[in-house]
Structures are given as C-alpha cells and as structure tokens.
Image (cartoon, rainbow, N blue to C red; front, side, top):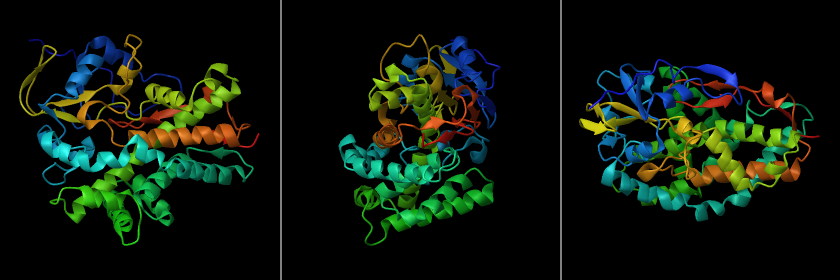
Length: 387
C-alpha cells in the first residue's frame, strides 16, 4: 500500500487569469498521479482523483458518501461550505443509498428532458425579453453584471412557481450566500419566503408537484430547504457557465467561425460545459470507513474530491461522456434544465441579435477562480447587442 503523492500547487486558491488560460494547478494535479493529496481549505488533507476511470469508480463507491456527518472532525462547516448533515436536513446532495433513491424518485420525473421541453418556448421568451431590454438601451452592457444571474434565476423561479416579481429577492438571496453569518442567515430566510411563495395556494409550478411526491416524513421546513437547493444551485452553476457560453458565441461570431456555425446548439453547449465545467470539483465526499483506493489507504472520514475540470480537459482522456454533471446516482437532477437554458440564449442571440459583438477583444476577457471548490466566472463581459 502506498501513500498518495502530495501536490504543492493550491487548487483552491483565488486566482485571476485569462479566459482561455488553464488553472495553474490542473496540470500539476494530473501529472502527480490518479489520486493525489492536497491541503483542504478547512484544514487537513483532501484526496483528489484526477483519473477518469477512477473518478467513475468513486462516484458509485458505497463507502464514499456525501453526508457531511462523515466530514473530518474539527472542520468548520462554513469554511468548508458544507450543508447540514443528512439526518438534520435530507437533501439530494447529502443523502446516499435507499434514502437518496427515494428522494431522487420524487425529483427526477419533474426534470426529465421531456418535461423540460414543455418549458422550452417559455424559457426562450424569457431570454429574448431580457436581452431585448438590454439591447434597447443602445449602450454597451456588461452581461456578467446582472444578466447571467437574472436569467437562470428567472427561469428556475418560473419553473418552480415562484412569482416573477420575487426574482430580485432571489438575486439578493444568492448574493447574500457569499457574506458573513448574518448575511447568510438573512439569505436563507429569504429562500424560505421564496419557497413558501411557490407553494402558496394558486401557484402553478413544479414546487407544488414536488410537495406531493416527497416522502411523507419530509416536513414543510425540510421541503423549503429542498426548494432552496434547486433555486440556489440553479444560479450557482448556470450563472458562470452562461458567461463562458456567451463569450464563446461572440468570439465565434467575431472570427466568422465556420466550424462553430455548423455546430448544433446542443453540441456547442456541451463543449462549453466540458471546457468550462460548471463546478471544477465534485461536491465533498467522505469515506465512511477505512478503504483502499487505487493502492492508496484512506482512513475513515477522509475528504475526497473529483477533479472534474481536469478530467474533462485531459488531452489523454478517451472520447466519451464528460463529467460536467457528474455520473452515477448523484448525476445532476437539473442537467436538462441547465442545458435548455443555455441553448435558448444561443438560439436567441443567433436569431435576434446577429450583429451582437464583444466590446473588447476576446483575449482581454478575464476570469476569477472564486476559491475553495467553487468554480470560476468571467469578471466582466462587455458587449454591444445591436450591431
């Protein structure tokens, strides 16, 4: 049995880099081996899986679990970005095994490709309405300042049944999650109000359907938390992905990229998600007992991450499904909705704004790595929507 090689490059640091510049730690992680050891933001070691085949094994391993109750002793949940333990708050992202399967059965039928296509025209109309409002100002607009946050939140609120006059409240709540304990507390209270609004009498949306489908033991407060995760995750990952997608659309237009023009919208979206993974790492996983992984001994309560961004962009990776939305039983429930949203924006831009262009050279765009296991997003995306 061997120990995992230790990497000195910090994969969790806040960094600024060019739009096409890879994260400085990605190559170092991959070069060190299929499983490497680094320093976790909350302290102690974390084992990071950099190999595609091993990652898929980890994603279905019965003794590598998502319940924060198995996090290393002494971890500060706020620093680590941990959810409540599954026993206190059931959620799709913390339960495992039969309990997770039961809760997933309540969610999954609501977010199938077929169900999401029912919302296609509505989502396209929302994209057109928001972009037209920006274009009509006649000014250069920074799409990262508001649009990339407002559009996915408008969509997820509409789908769930949250009244759209509460979108500004949803935006403020999402931004409040980056603040201190007091700001986070206010944000969570606001999410509770949004969930209650979606579940109120007369509202027509997936929130009401979910209430009828969840196990009987789920309380109203716990249901509110489940809706919070759908709203917050719907913004947290789609927001940065939308920025990179828009940048690639405008770059292709500027270059009159014939190859991009011949690519279907679905292919263009998937390639963007591969190159700029919505989450660079998996959510935290923990060993529920001592185990051996690829010849490395991991003690119980060890933190484990999958390097999704590194695996997706590994030049040696064989062609096949990427890990942008994960794999196995925790495959992202909202994957179909996210791809539909992103595709709608591309279609609206191509159809309604053929003259839209970047206001700066593509090479001048910058991205920031937000730190921890969060992803990166463009710092700004100035565009002229009317040619």
